[in-house]
Image (tube, rainbow, N blue to C red; front, top):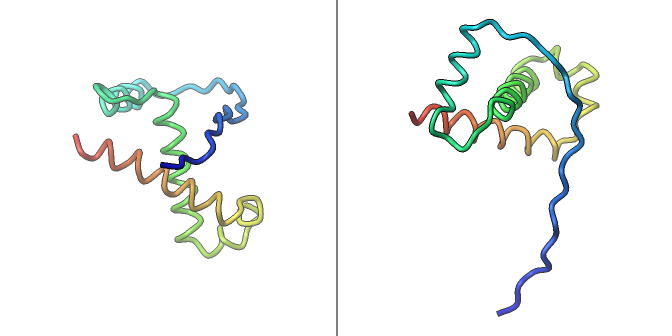
Length: 93
């Protein structure tokens, strides 16, 4: 059996941002991720990506904006897949 070459994954570049959430939103996110293998940050990132993808795919104005040139098609497909997985895992509770 021939196995493919193992590639050590790299950690994506990140930027630390401090934002304030209303208490009810924090409670809802914490409730959604309770018992799941998901952090608060991962959930918020997936939610934001999901919104971007919905804006991109369903808004003509958004498709014509600079965001469509910022994201490559391959990256958009990856974000969509990631966002859909995150949303699906929270909907199954």
